Image (cartoon, rainbow, N blue to C red; front, side):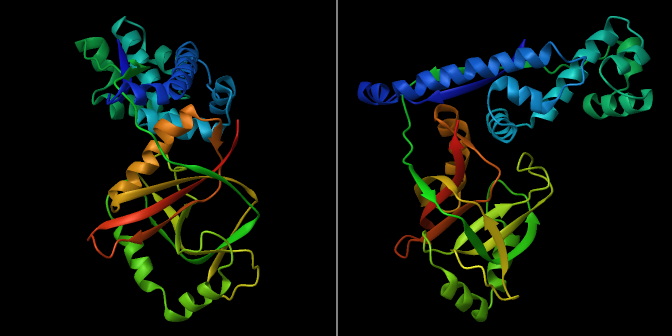
Length: 316
């Protein structure tokens, strides 16, 4: 039995199928590689699994692989490994193995540590599995594409020199959907003096007020903890007053994704599609650098906006 991640593309016309054929083949190849990684993990559940070694086995950077895995599976790589270990531990307990032996088998340094982790995961004690036959399972993942058509994503690739993100920043709660009220409060806190300085410093595209996120507590892999959110501009200037914060960004390549529709849902959906659809089928991998976006609200349609998402990438 497996957990199946199913990628569905709605069918609309033969022409659209032809247009996405190459992308589909690339996705299929990517899914085969992911399946190999899943098998690799399963054959090493009783080992001390090195997450960086898994990424190396997958042939991509550790940062890129963890982001892709999270967006495709809905959980972090470490969470998946923990769930699989405890699931297999449950099987071993049902087969009559001693709790102490099972704990050390799956890498726990103490019986208490294993017992706490197992109860938190399953809702019952390891001894209940032995005495009462209680069980919980977490099957290994499988990845499947069902072809029903294609959804194209508009994007462009831009090379940018080194620049600074300059603006006002604050630690805010991680939130994947809906309006983040703490970011709203951050925007409302910006003074006229700060806005004027930002406008005077802005000298590189996009010539917009941008929202940038970085330094997430869980590396953007959980909807928990906080991240640093900055509202500001891009500039090549280094001299900035103490009224503004500055984040230096190295020269590099950016994948830019325009989108238009209800705000913020369209922007958030675009961000998700970048990781679940575009990156797995592209020649690029995401790098650990601030991602930013800007939004222009439509004056004629309430709650409607044009946005662009800028993702830092490099060639695989």
